[in-house]
Picture 1 (tube, helix red, strand yellow):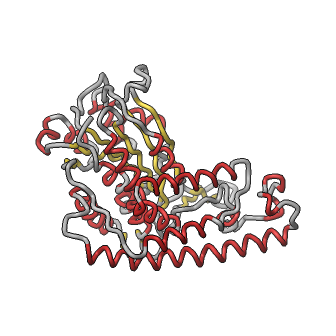
Picture 2 (cartoon, rainbow, N blue to C red; picture 1 turned 45 degrees about the vertical axis):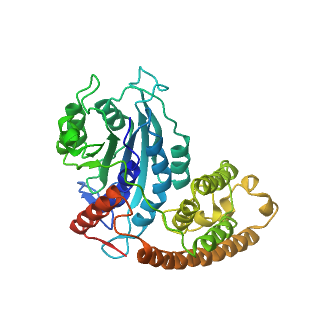
Picture 3 (tube, rainbow, N blue to C red; picture 1 turned 30 degrees about the horizontal axis):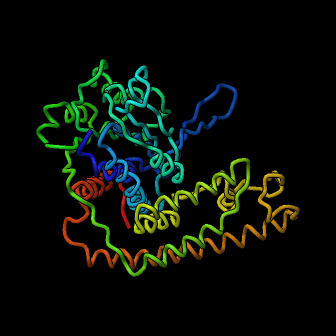
Length: 391
């Protein structure tokens, strides 16, 4: 597959698009009257949750797509961070990742693989994107859509936005499973299918991509793969990168996966830096936001839970600096790291505001790329309809 260098601007920008719809501040409760008892309140699934499945073609000539995914993830997260619903509430985000059209994948499975189940772990999402490789294959759009519908837990809460984004430039009609059936099934599950044809707009229409989106109420977009995203270096970049190193020192690993997760954090920092310094900067900005939460392995984030209790921590799974410490000593250490983190994150955010102002003054019109410009406009329009605002 060719012509897909800017897909992720679409796919992951969906993060923000998604937030536009899931705009309910509190979980609804329904009372079930009983004959001999007081009404029982039953919690619905959590509201303000956005579920997005990205279906990426990893057949030949798709390296540009994957590189864009790696680089633009942090742009999209940072945009999504500023979405608010009503007052100050921002939606949660879960992303799933599939690859299809790769000869390395099983022909029995239709050359389709679930790379990542729904996850809000930004390091894990980054890791999976960096794991993708390309190879020639058959691209079955209908089948990969249907597979994602069957394998993923989309939930039943109609307040949550559920989106599929699929990209490619081969006919949407390939494969034994009719794409119309797959898209109809998506609509029945309240899942919107958005299609991105990487090539001529009219060609995407004649090969089924537009109809694939239309049937579920989604959007069809055709992109010019030759448009390049221009990154602008600023005087604040190196300062933010230095602060990111300090930020990492505020994490306290715990649990069976603590050490491995902390290592993953470091590896993904390195991956971003190897791509380009500006990508590392954008990742650092994401790490200063509410969306970068690691309560499953970091004691500082875990301590924000109202039910957190130091006494219940398995002492054998603490890092070496806390071995043999009393509960009060552990609490003091956590509070110290939390104070440092808040300060560092604030510094990063303040520097990023100056960075964004610098970019705004020096960026030429249209340099963000055709797709990114179009998606930002779509996000703002749809967010407004669902009472979302942007800082």
